[in-house]
Length: 263
Ligand code: 2AM
Ligand code: CA
Ligand code: CA
Ligand code: CA
Image (cartoon, rainbow, N blue to C red; front, side, top):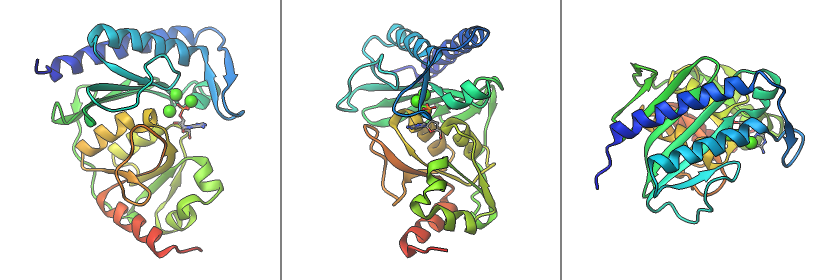
């Protein structure tokens, strides 16, 4: 059976709108917060409940789906064969807990390893970014996005996660020095939205598959590059040190990596 991607796109949007309302309702009560690997790596009852909800809705839409979810309610995946749904129920959990803002829900749908549909929902702004190769475009709610300008590093702002900056991973200080400046938002999803909109020219972070699955699909559809820090394709079954960048900023950053410069 050939997949009706347009219909699936609409169905997933409806599921995410329901999920958003459930999350907003749950935010009216105190959150239950637990540490995962350390005190900066949190999970809440809402992360878990939302993943359970999304996984059950995905199984309803696509009974043969293979699902990889951050909180473990999906399947144990060893390959990207078939249709694979990669789910991050709350991206930016620290922001969710501390700010009640700047967090996202993300779903990426891959067919035999090829990204087809991506969804990043900025929950508090109520803007759902969706689209990809299968529907030939990217939209913010109903509005189609055009590709961001291909600015070089020197003409744009860079995003990164805090550890990359604190530990100067991947020559981050030299990259910031060469850019117009840096911004840190604390959510891969929000950072990716900034790249989609051309508000930043790039983003660097250690990311798990669910942090970048949706974003890679949307970014590639708007000609923004997603690779490892040395320019290779991502392995969507493991962690990667990810470089998101415009074509020109990617060239500039890969040159800095090659030159191995320090300030
Ligand atoms: P999360 O909130 O879904 O865990 C924070 O810089 C960003 O990096 C968030 O998008 C966060 O996703 C992600 N991240 C990945 N690994 C993380 C970790 N070990 N601790 C905290 N955030 C992590
Ligand atoms: Ca997490
Ligand atoms: Ca995440
Ligand atoms: Ca998460």
